[in-house]
Image 1 (tube, rainbow, N blue to C red):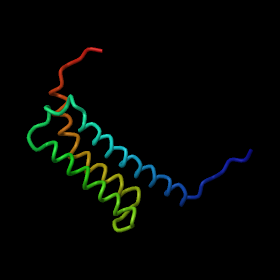
Image 2: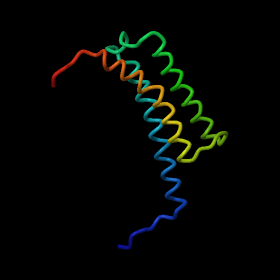
Image 3: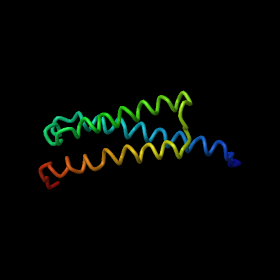
Length: 104
């Protein structure tokens, strides 16, 4: 059986789709995390709103990217994810610190 070699265009397209999918999954995972009951009282004032706003802005950007209103290549998706992580990660670290220690 002969192996198929992918064209450079197909590889770029696949990498773009994977980067987009990772960003979408990160948005929805973050949203689901915000809805967990045990975390509700762990957010500092305004932090939850910051995360929700950042996720909404990213989802809006994704919609624009799908309509080709903004750049939608792999680098653009990866940059947008880093931007979102820059907002979400510090806030979530503060929330995690407030959780009681559990020994597994």
